[in-house]
Length: 375
Image (cartoon, rainbow, N blue to C red; front, side, top):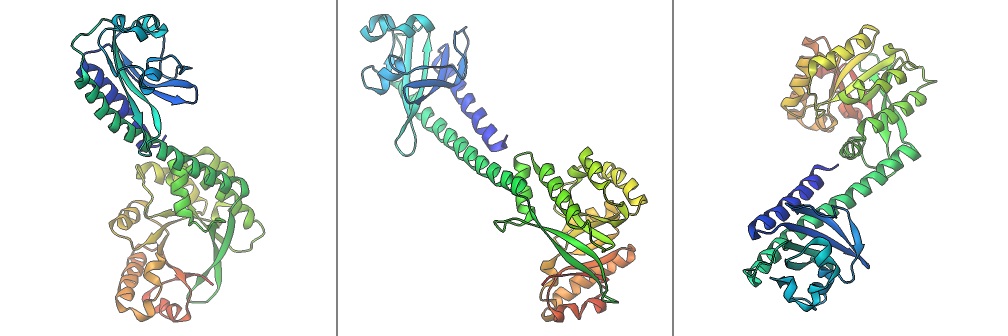
């Protein structure tokens, strides 16, 4: 569940409880009106009731219907003295002695439902002032509910997008990894492409918001392994997260490919809670020849933490630093410093996103060992 949605629901329930305590009544609730029915969306009580959150019943004839229809005053201090409530079903069914309720309307003006409270005993002290307390609270709660609905709508849209990515599949483009010194293609980098053009990292963030990040990663890995099944390239580079590596399904997937062909890339933005656990998971793969890369280096202090604690075999320099370095001396200084660090750590320095011959011409001089060429 989205944290925002959960927070909105919790806050709304807390405010209903606050209203009940502030007015000194036994019960307070939010009812949502949909067609000819009302449903209790929030309910707090210090007495036993025959209803609970989620209970639904006909709207007609309820106190809520009489109040929103203008037939009943918003404050009823003694239900036994009010002709509309004295013999009403809910008076005896819920044990209502005094009642106060106000409509809840959306920003559009559409009726959503009601915020109501009641006590088992008559309350002669109840007045329109209590209704004003409810009315002000109802506005705040309504805004929280609308936030929840907006988040729900966004999550539904995200779920449909992620479902499509999983059902329709992802196009896997294989970009050549070129050794600078010889010009030889020594590997392939798998890049996931979605039909709507959204970058993999953003789609992964969307899937993670739904708790389906690993599912998407392993789906892309499955398609990557299928795409390189007949490839003669010695190394296949694929993006991975620490969470996906922990999943038992990962081990089953890579059993189809010799680990010596794999380069597992960990993004600099990837949150790693337990480096010791991750390095332990990586160790058997590395002993079998798999290589580890820190991806998109050049984005700040997080780069250094990953590099120091993962001891990568490859440091991959972000394309944002590489593109245009032929015309930008400051970029060349940064790229060279990262390449120098890689050399001291006995790691390869790979430049990403190299598309021009002018940029390529600088690579060997700056200490770059490999580049990923883009067309």
